Length: 336
Image (cartoon, rainbow, N blue to C red; front, side, top):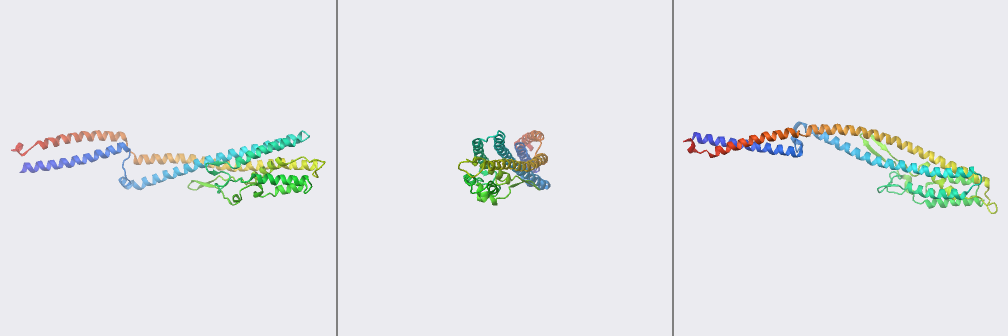
């Protein structure tokens, strides 16, 4: 009975040991497959809170980087569009200067350039990023330039009233200066639209607002529309004079030039925000790298060590199975 009890005890102990090694083997295989020390936070014990904090920081940085990427695209679109609009204005300004310098003004040349450029200017004001209009502020679902024809009609009427003597050149200029956003064809809701900002760091919001109804854009619109509508007075039928025509044309040139300068100010303002965005992005790249390194050091296993442990455990398990097999073949007869 002594030998029998001893044999049973050894067999039970061996089975328990084999179960333990089998569990270890499965755990090592999981580590090798996932390259993670544990598959639950609780497995990290006292380090669980640290792991959660590191992961939370990494996710936050990812969100900031997504915001930066989206805003970077919008800013580039705005800057490129503004530069194209300024080029359109410069072309109108140049054709006015050329015509006035050469003596006799070919007003048709000015009209044609202004007409073509105004049409392109409208398209640029209504530029979209996906389904969002980039010059509408918080009203991004709203097309900012809603009714350019309204501006054209209003400007044609101003020129007609000057030509037929209903108003003087000074009055025409004053009326152009006083035109409202609705007169210019902007959507009524644009007036109430706010600034667009995006959080790119814990304490940093980037303002990338450039509105279609900022003063520079409005002056450029008025200048192009006036250049498109302006006519040289016919002394036989018109009350407006050649002197007044040159007064209006000079005002027209300055209006476009002033609008371009003001739009350049909008570009400078946005460029400053763009520089801030790039600085924050560079800092995030550094912080993300450091955070991911800490996460890897805390969570990841050394696969070389895992493979070595698996091989060592396999050797132990083979030996244990062989020992168990020998013990299973023993019987009370062998001891008698």
